[in-house]
Length: 219
Image (tube, rainbow, N blue to C red; front, side):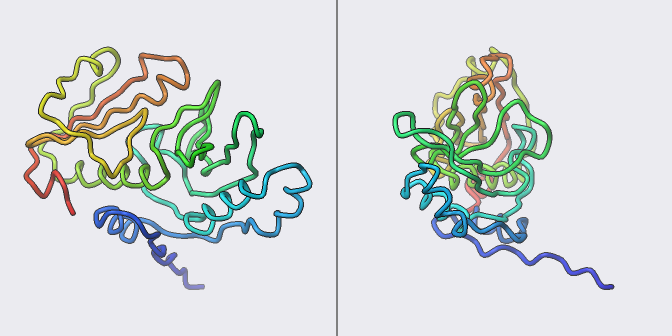
């Protein structure tokens, strides 16, 4: 029997050129469960129709897409997939963004406002949308390829980083996490685990140095 490779995924709209190329070149799409057959049952369970629509839209756009691992959060979701919304009218609703690659103390979720983040003892939004998370993945892959050196910083040293002259990278839609662009370097700051798990020692930053203009932007 001849094995057939999974085709590259249809790239969701709205991403930067760099991220579109990343998803098309390095991603694949596997069959994903459909949400629509569960709609009536979820309505009977008290889940608002608007929340079911959010899950359906996510699954149709991103469900089944597998991307290379992130440099933090033990790689992030293995395959993007939505699941049953959880929450309440007063507190808001969350749904799974996909299972982790390894056993983790938290799960990856889409928050009440569409944010991508992690949830354990409490909710920590990392990026303002799943698009921001994918943009961050694409930028990490791009920067790691073009940088002359990569330095990892942990703990209190992260707060001591001198970001004067740097500007935030807008497409990653950073919240708890963010990317910063300087004249010849990029800095990724990951504070999500520290916030979610109340573990300040988990703060990390990756400094990608020696980048030319293409390395800084890549599209």
